[in-house]
Length: 140
Image (cartoon, rainbow, N blue to C red; front, side, top):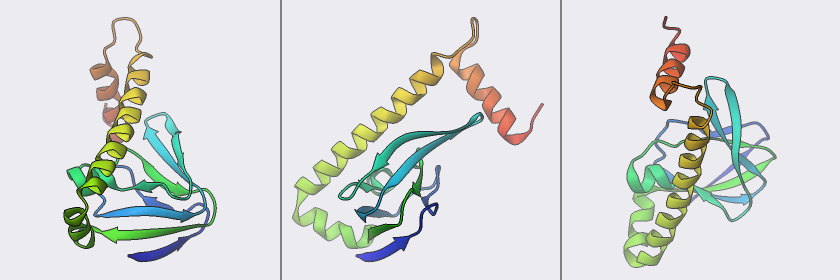
């Protein structure tokens, strides 16, 4: 396990990256930010004892959020290679991490559905997301 200290404003994980470690917050407050074409929105906050990085670690999936320190924070990082023997010895930990990941996916899905509810008449979610991609890349 590696101990990392972060200052307020530091970005620990960028949205879209695939985490190769499990992170456990020891002290401080972190915020999960979801970016879209119209800006950033806070999705959740992390308090001491909370963890993140499960999506990349367990499913090889990109994170849906940017994780940023709101205050000075201490985070412990357990690399995938170091976590494997622990999960083999204690499968209940893997199950609990799976539950945490499922809750986070549900939050992301709820946010996407909230985004879909903003559709203009005759406009689909796919149309809105396609336009967001064009906007992000400066396409006509």
